[in-house]
Length: 155
Image (cartoon, rainbow, N blue to C red; front, side, top):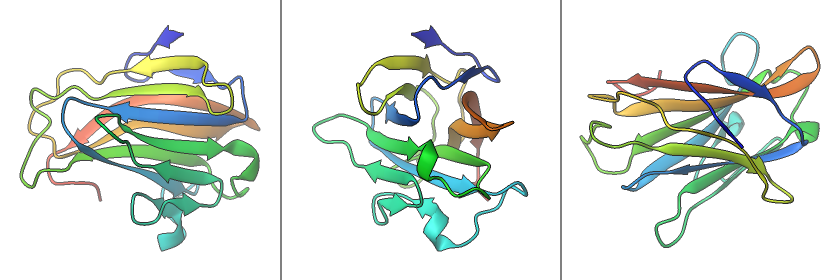
């Protein structure tokens, strides 16, 4: 298993990956299916606890302190989707990521084998965070550690 740093990327060795996002506090985790222009095609490309399935992507809410999981079946992702962005925001209104270190664990969805982990460094007044991206490059799927936070939520 590889510990990733911001901006690093790895090829995915399996077609189905699960991204578990955990933290010491409750998070709202989502998966956004984005086209080459960085936009969703419709509300169907926003996968989260109230809409747990999308084209090739599913959301599973964590139980008993476990984090939420976004699962990506790369073979089922539509051809015009370039990346799936895994985001997190804090469940408590007005809360920031200061002092909270979420961790993403990327693993094979079928065998559970850990591929990589990523914990974004130096978070402060951010209320929303792009944790990782699962993206397509030259026909191959990869994962990138992002860790970019936003003080006013996601656009």
